[in-house]
Each structure stands twice: as C-alpha cells, then as structure tokens.
Image (cartoon, rainbow, N blue to C red):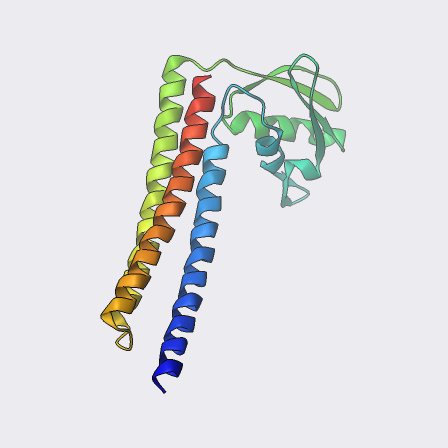
Length: 193
C-alpha cells in the first residue's frame, strides 16, 4: 500500500512539474519575444513580419499583406499585395518605433532604412531590455512560489520528498531565469555592436 502511495505522489509531482514547465516555457517565450521586438542596429525581418496591421477590418500580421526582403543596399523593402495598403503598412512600421525611416517609395513598394542608434537611444533600449527581464523574472518567481505552496499543502509527502521536489523546483525556475538572462545579454550585445 505504501509503494502505491509513493508512486501516486511521484506521479502527482511529475504532473505538477510538467504544468509548471509548460507555464515557464510560455512565459519565457513571451518575454524573449518582447526582447526580440526591441530595435537594434540590424534589420530584423522576423520582427517586421510579426507586426500587426488592421486590414479589411481585422488584424493581420504584416507578412499576410506584404512581401518583405532586404535589398543589396541593406534596406528593408516592403512590397504590398494590394497597393491601397502601402500607406497603412508604412504607418505601421513607422509607429512600431523600431528605428525605421522611409527612404523612398513606389506605388506598391516602400524602402526603409534604419536610423543610427545614438548613445542616448542605446541606453534607453538597454534599460527597456533590463525592465523586460526583471518583469519576466518576477513572473518566474510567482511560478516558483506556486510550487512551494503546493509542496507546503501536500500533507502526504515526507519531509525528504518535499526537500527533493523543492530542489527540483528551484533548479527548474533557475534554469528558465538563466535562459531569459541569456536572451537579455544577447539583446544588449546586439545593441552595443
């Protein structure tokens, strides 16, 4: 009977742990996505493609209404599928505050260049990256607290089991915090290059 109870608790912990991993994974994706959206000195087609444009009454990613490419002159080139949307697409890119400016345009293509990052802008963007990371770490700490609260409430676990599971929870959250810090460091390096 005792073995079954231990197996049950082990399975229960594994289920809780898996839910927390999924939650941590989701949070990491959100915060790394926020870091990715901070402008840098390089054109990022991925970031531009994901910008949302209101087209025919619904929000669509920019990639659904235009082709994007980088020209040999290192310009962002947007070719809209419908020439009527060209001004809307341009406004979306300019409003995104990613540092793009219109270089020239035709009926259905717009050429953008990146404005240089000044020291003042770089400092502001680094500060923004650090704030995003802190917000993410705060969310990770809340998930960590959920794990600890579950362990405290679980009366059927021995003290040894609780300590073992708590260490696993500590390591799990620490690993995700380190992944977020790596993403922040990558962004800061990108901004500094």
